Every structure is written in C-alpha cells, then in structure tokens.
Length: 155
Image (tube, rainbow, N blue to C red; front, side, top):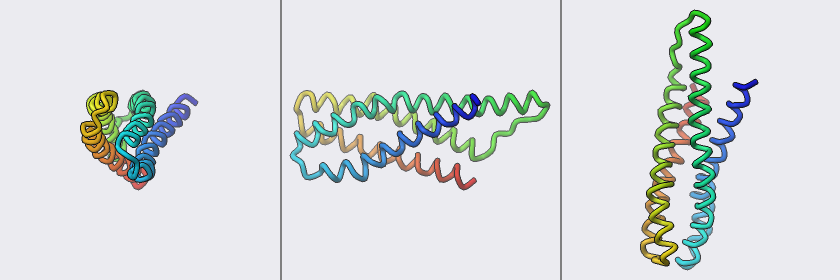
C-alpha cells in the first residue's frame, strides 16, 4: 500500500510538472506574445512565481519517492537472498530525473531570481532577456521530461 501510494505521488508530481511546462511553452507563451512588454512580463511573472514554488516541492517529492521506490525494491530483493541489478530504464529515469531537478534548481533560484528582480524594477529590457533565457531552460527540461517518460514506457 505504501509503495502504491508513493508511486501515485511520484507520477502525479511528474504529470503536474511536465504538463505545466508543456502548457506554458506551447500555449501560454504564444497567447501572450502580442501583449506589450510590461503587461506580458508581469503576467508571466504572476504565473511563473506560484508554478515554480509548487514545482520546488514537486521536484523534491519526485526525487524522494523515486529513490525510496528503488531502495525499497533493492532491499526486498537483497532480503530475499537475491542480487539487485537496477534495470536500465530505472537507471535512465533516475539520471534524467536528477538532471531535471538540477536544471529546475537553476531555473528557480538563478534565472527566475533575475527575471523577478527585473520585473519588480520595471526594467522591461532586462526582464525580457531573463524571460528568454528562462524559457530556453524550461524547454530543455520539458524535452528531458518527455524523453524520460517515453524511455520509461518503451523499455
């Protein structure tokens, strides 16, 4: 029951995280592209701040639940007298997931910080530049997330 609950939390965290990035990149960004810079950047700041706050917790929950599930399976196998060899898809998932968390940390604590500082100072040129960099890294993380999901489902 605990394993199933943690796996559910793991998957829901991923769905919200990756789905949010997909929505922001392919729907929100194009929808606000025609707005004047101050309006567009304030709106994006208003959306990104709570989303990144939530994803801070979700990314850590994803990491924790994934490591717990791997550890639980390894412990069960070893206690039964076997030797635990982590499957390739689990290894790829763990490596790519950890990479996503690290990239997210950069997005949340470095890039968003620059963006927020520029928006609060109403420096729209700097805010636009910061948002462009932030968007690129979100797209990288989105691609890694989608690849991770596909690799996990196909192996």
